[in-house]
Image (cartoon, rainbow, N blue to C red; front, side, top):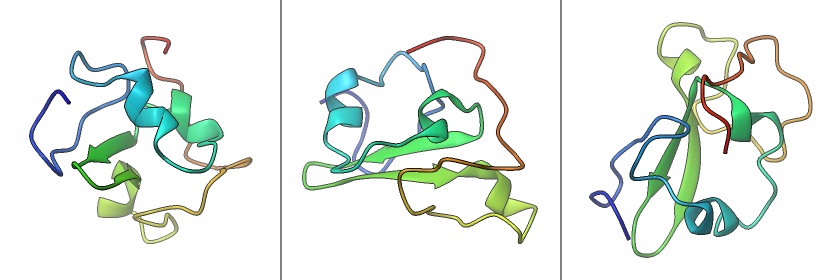
Length: 80
């Protein structure tokens, strides 16, 4: 797997793979295409982390998936 274990990657980053997104266990919903989403992957698990949670308490650091509505959703510059 590309990247180091637990290292966050921005959506569409070179180290991110469709295989990692498939390992989530639940569809990510809006997070899959959001520029604030960070994919955290290790050999054992994969999580989606919301970057907005760092500066805004309204957002969960690790949102329950799938995310179907989000006030902070902002489309990523590259598609997946």
